[in-house]
Length: 258
Image 1 (tube, one colour):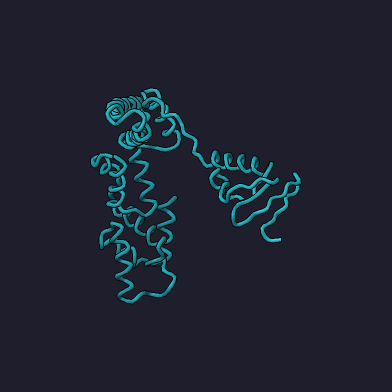
Image 2 (cartoon, helix red, strand yellow):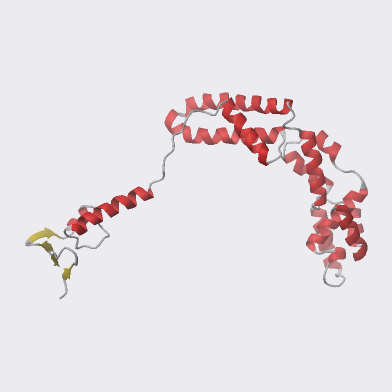
């Protein structure tokens, strides 16, 4: 019959109507279940159903809350030193790069701490933490754990083998915090290395001697030259790379990447 519902388990019966709902002879106003925070559960909640609904709502609310972690003190020298060693165990870094890593750690703490401690206090503590970060990095440089020259030499070789031009490699090293003079001292200056790097890129892009189709038209040749030019290769190097025979180009790339 419309408006009636029977529940199994506790044997209770509730009857709904347009005026409200009833249970065991007692009438409740329509919408009472909403005022108690049980909506959008079933409108007819009686006996043990009400208790179960209340517990369910509490459990869902608790599950939706994000656990709030204590802010804690500002990062000190000991914590920053451990963070630096942990980073160096996984990645190579320059002096400037490692300093940025530690400063980002301090900035994350500052964002969490500001609502609790206030902007002025956090600002003072941040200045102190940044000074500690600089001292930590300086000590690691002094003991040789951070070496910009060794980093630049290794990175320059890997960039060339990946098909980066000398100009692009210099920009990449500068972005990592390598001094321009140091970068220029480690970047290969010979024409053979630059040609081999251009061929590595041509092989990746399937252009020049590595193209799968036949010889391109004039527009296609300009497009291929543009690919190498945008990568930082000089026009004469780009033309030489694109005009090589496939077998010679493949042999040069193989020898270069060994």
